[in-house]
Length: 184
Image (tube, rainbow, N blue to C red):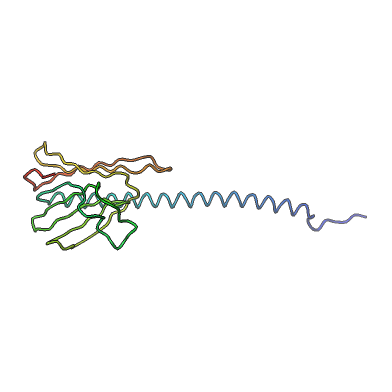
């Protein structure tokens, strides 16, 4: 007498469950890797966008400035005492100060993760904004007065990260209204 098979044996069910679990593990690892890559890409895009916004603001400020100075930061810490996580001793940090015809001044101060722009008039802060783009290992200001018009030069060297090579950004901006050499 023959019995017809109507179901699966326990061994067949266990083999199918094991194969399904292995397949789901591979899919979960792949989806996790894609999500991590997407987050990193978004962070890098945001950082690049912030650098572009910073460079545009710097160029606008430099183009309308009447004069400039490059010096170490004069304050004991960077100018945001409310945020203790980003305040660092600033004795060696270079600062760019731009003077405008209306009597105001814009200072560019390096931070741990970017640059802070502070606009003052009569020693009162009129505006403050922070541009963040990740760990900037080194920011240095210099000027070139050999041409017809002086230029302000910013060199940013990013920290070496495991997933990105070290990068250097050099921004040369011409002062259109400055006549005299700065006191550096």
